[in-house]
Image (tube, rainbow, N blue to C red; front, side, top):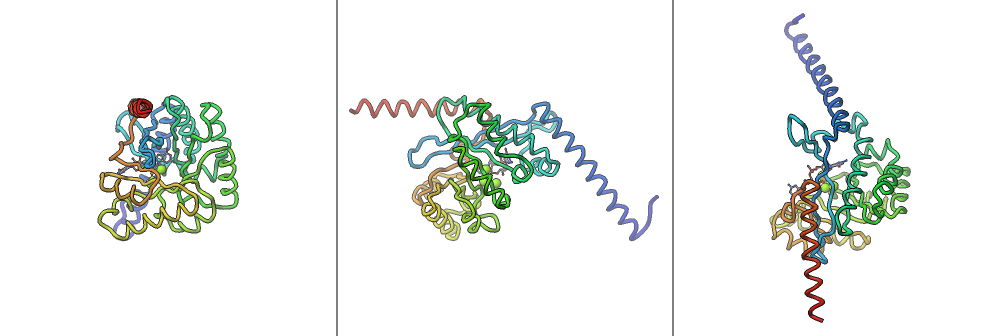
Length: 286
Ligand code: C2E
Ligand code: MG
Ligand code: MG
Ligand code: MG
């Protein structure tokens, strides 16, 4: 029944909630179906090693190739997958797919995989990682796991991270500087790498504050024996500034965009050829 005035607005509110819930259930079903129908796909974004000027590796970034809606970016479905718990099986698939793809690259590059905080809380991440490594045959030292400050570093979480490191896997702190507790976070666990968030890189040329934060982060990382990757590098000016500041690696559209498995394979083949010809040049000098 249609009510008037104040109660009418309540009814509208109720209807909105129902809509949202129905939409949400539909999204959960669609996600479950997407996993079964293999609609998820990993893109790979090359990362440049600034000390050698060669490829360091790639970050795996999930996409949903929806049959009707086209390519859907992760921020539009990962949160729902986290709430429904589906991130568990999706996360296992991501690990297995990324590790087995890295085995096809023909160069011993690193592969970096994002871990959801929910995977940490609800899943046996250690078992998932061990399984992905043994199924693919990827040596543990080629796998990097990225976590953000949204993972609560409880005693249990720290113990899990330590056991992952004992396997030979590296642990990277993603989006550094955007969370609430960056400094105490660094003190809680010996990360191998800090990824400097793209919001700071974006400001490196024009904002003295961003530049100061980047410089300080790189210096801090060095003292803590951690390496640094600058994210979101879009211009050669930014890349130069990051080189001068001493960043270990750079990642961003300037170097390459995230691309499908086949395209990144071709990109790596090219990188391999230039590395080989550089080596030949060196040899012919002697
Ligand atoms: P992230 O891990 O910080 O990934 C970097 C994001 O920056 C990616 O967005 C990438 O496409 C984008 N990016 C790279 N270079 C540039 C650049 O030069 N300029 C700009 N403007 N953007 C750049 P994407 O792929 O949309 O992923 C967004 C976030 O979604 C990721 O942030 C990560 O937190 C999450 N995510 C992506 N893939 C996965 C996954 O497989 N599992 C989990 N749990 N989360 C994922
Ligand atoms: Mg990441
Ligand atoms: Mg990031
Ligand atoms: Mg991010």
